[in-house]
Image 1 (cartoon, helix red, strand yellow):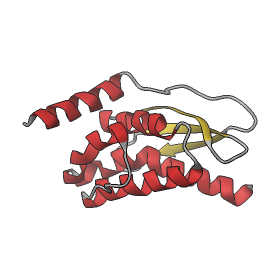
Image 2 (cartoon, rainbow, N blue to C red):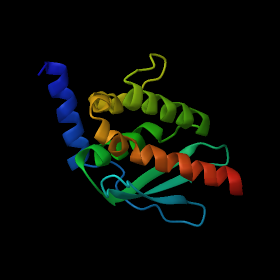
Image 3 (tube, rainbow, N blue to C red):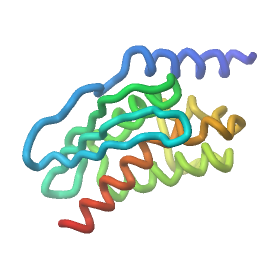
Length: 147
């Protein structure tokens, strides 16, 4: 195992054990989506507070699952806090491409989520890494539909 692989592994473990933004956000204007990974049973609820200018003011999650899904959720919430909906969509597509295709978009910085690059080689774990990102997609699709 290379030093970089060791660092990535430690980063995933750290996010899994010390989950960032692992809490509920309360309020009438908070978007939320409950999501379950059908392949392994991981569950989570995503909470998003948007500003009037379609910027993610706050984002959090609650749930339980494997280290990959919980680390991915922690990493995503850190990455998206303060991001526009357009940027969030770009991050989402870049993450999907990295996990499913093994390709990293050079022009989009996924931050700590780059530590999940190796999941590409573990097809059975793709949905674990993408669960919270899929919840984001569905939450924002519902928001646009009912806005």
